Length: 55
Image 1 (cartoon, rainbow, N blue to C red):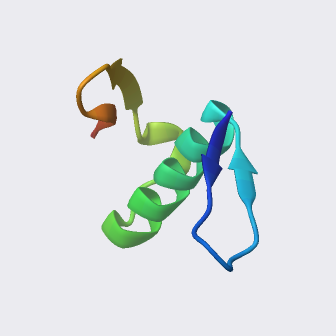
Image 2 (image 1 turned 30 degrees about the vertical axis):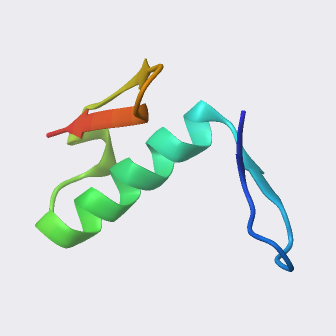
Image 3 (image 1 turned 180 degrees about the horizontal axis):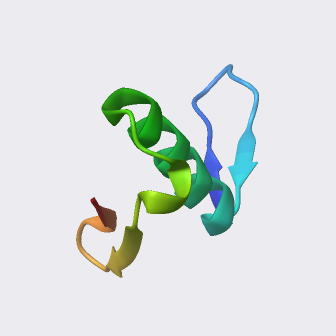
């Protein structure tokens, strides 16, 4: 789970699957392909946090 929050703003907790689905939907809409045709890979780095590749 990933928590997104700033001071004074409601907290949002997203699972990794929800993030991947959102990336697939957004990329598909922008590029005119089906969401199932988009591949997403997330990784974790201790220094930088989450990183992702899609295509």
